Image 1: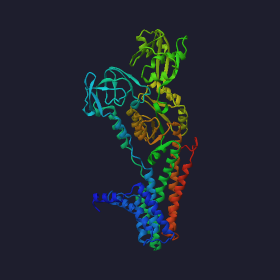
Image 2 (image 1 turned 90 degrees about the vertical axis):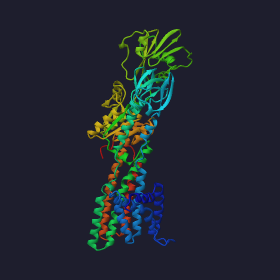
Image 3 (image 1 turned 180 degrees about the horizontal axis):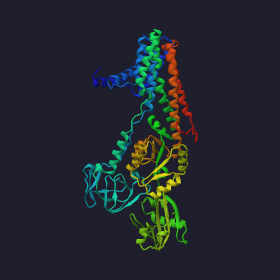
Image 4 (image 1 turned 90 degrees about the horizontal axis):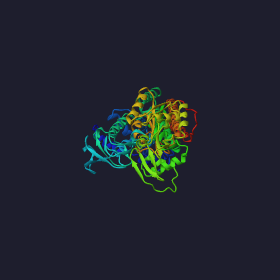
Length: 627
């Protein structure tokens, strides 16, 4: 079997999928019960041979591939040696039992193995495949992005994603940049303003000139960086496989010592049987499976055992702002009256009368907060990106930016405007400023409690956002976060995380949007908001908060640390049981059959101990230190 191609054919024929493995395990277990109970069957051979064939052959095949193809020694090499030695001496039950336990462990590992990450594919799938290349005034041809070059002019229609980076030539737009920068509020763009791929036009169409080709666009750069960050993540190697070479050597030495000291070859076989690292192999996946099940019951989906292990070692949590620490939607924070003859309700009512004719997200927030029952229609004129003008009761009403009101003859001082995070919409009646409406993205009520609990666990928080510094500073202060950075693009967030990592700090990123995908992939671990989070963020993360409940984050870290503690306890117990079994085997107290049963004690212990994690409950502040 020297040819690698021939070996692959045999390997694919032998390899079993999880469902087939489950069937084989069930049949093998029944066969071993018949064998140990000495129940007569119509079979002309010991039923234990069924377990040897169904569960043992894949182990032998895997060991053979590791030794002769990859030249790598793993735990299944030691199991194969014990299995063959047991068969040579006629201990069929012992051989079948060892093979069965190994396949159960393999089944559990398969169940908790890393799922294929689909975030990158989803990111690629969201990228527009075509662009509307200008053909004439208001006319275009749809061409693939790789046929669009710098200098070409393309149209962007309402609701479409901007496919390439460029500059607006005609028209104006309200761009949702939250997917790329995390800015909570849409941004008004007009002629001469730069736009980049990945943003979505929320209203009106516009003509833009392409500045960068497809390969150099912001979206493609994000895809490349996300792919590179994913490739840096190494798979978790099981402890048994990591120590496999030493385990094989030590087991063989112990078996030879037993044979040399006693002169009884059967005792050497017993040593090999009890030395099999079945309990070692079961120690991790059983605890991981129980931990994942516990988290799922609390609305936390942990992607895999590797994800759980990474989360348990986190020493810093970086939070996205929009949609993570905040709700993600603009809403009216407060109304400031600047004319005593108008109440807050009246100012909001007047503004909403005009804003109901606008499709701007800020306008929708104002209309939502006001009572417009019984209001008549009125004539309005919309100035995209600036404001809206109209008539009410024969008098002029203006709503919009401060500059818009000034250009329309409304005079006021900048001191009249309150200092607010978020966006301020001015309202003027008869060319007199009567009030301002302050809109913001509200912080989640549980945010400060989460940050406090993380600090108690010695896990400091870091706020990373693409929003402006004033807004980010205010959110950080309200949440109790000491360290924050504003105005960050996706690659900037990843760069900040890498700086922490280079300082030896394990960083976890918590986010919800496409703009967080790169940081989620580049961080040591990632947590995504499952309810409002983008598919890209969810598929890139190691854990998902199903109901966007960030109050579950401290519990997630406590749970993962508890799981790792259980794994260490299981490994220690397995080692003690195995060493004891080796001593008893050399002394002749155990034979291959009783040794196999004793060997099962370690496996049963780790399974039962891991199962206690299913009943684990939040302990608010207890046992939160490093494990």
